[in-house]
Image (cartoon, rainbow, N blue to C red; front, top):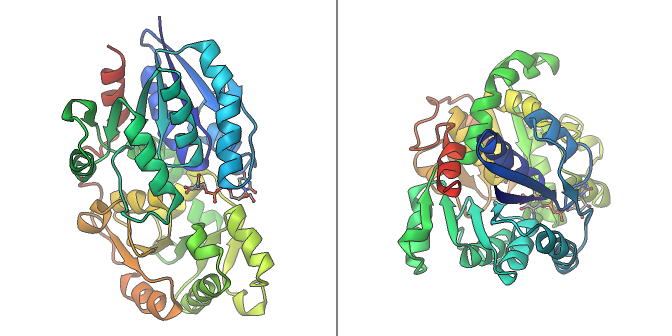
Length: 358
Ligand code: UD1
């Protein structure tokens, strides 16, 4: 029986793994899951495994946090013996986090076939660690599973052979489609005392937004201004929480904002699906809001997901109070129709399973 080994490590990997794990069940495949431990807080990791119905990983490498070099090196050192011992026929990596590129290096050097789920995305911004991770991972992968045709164009422009590229659609949307009924049943807005489409929800965690005191303070100021329009909920990523504390941004001037603990997948989906507006710097949230038809403002100068601007509800804004507030007031409540991007249909994992299960 063929063995496929998946390596995941950080929160945005888990919603990409879940549908593929389901799609491989019932096929003549042994699917081994390795969690690097890049994310380890219960709210960042176990909560997602539980919400998404992913079984416990076969291996947890427990690497934890560190500088890029430390974290990447730890993953490389701890993953190599696992992959050498298991000798899978194929290793799958997901997205663009440090666990993705570290696993790709290990697998390529062991001469084992590598597949990249969510290949070909490019922001053109080399100051983002994710851009480096994407480019290196794609270069090392034999199978490139792309979410949209712009990703195919990026890979072709880099000289990748067309035979390696498989346009399969957006696997995150598989998780969204599968979980939407549960999210609706949870009534997350009601649990937070909110009425549908009367509130904004925020996620911010990019180093460029949260590691610089002036930028984070500008963003927090803009969000505070926005509370005059309606409730603003902000589930705070651990990196951002550390910075808010370090820069002492929890003063009374930010009291109108609801700063919350990181949220599970279903609750967050339920809140996004009924929001008047989402403000983010996450890649996945740009896609989810585009699918849901909820207006999204992305506090970044660029995006590796241009289709969300061209065909979805996304708009890029500078990370400045003076830009955020008018854009948010303008976008508030401008709902669009749901799900009209090709192959963002809930069936991506099955298309990948068809390719890998030959
Ligand atoms: C990582 C990814 C980023 C992704 C994000 C999603 C890289 C380079 N970055 O960023 O692409 O969008 O995950 O969440 O891979 N921490 C905790 N508990 C945890 C995990 C992290 O407290 O479970 C704190 C630690 O202080 C850590 C910091 O968050 O140093 C950053 O974690 P790290 O995984 O290095 O990067 P993220 O900012 O989470």
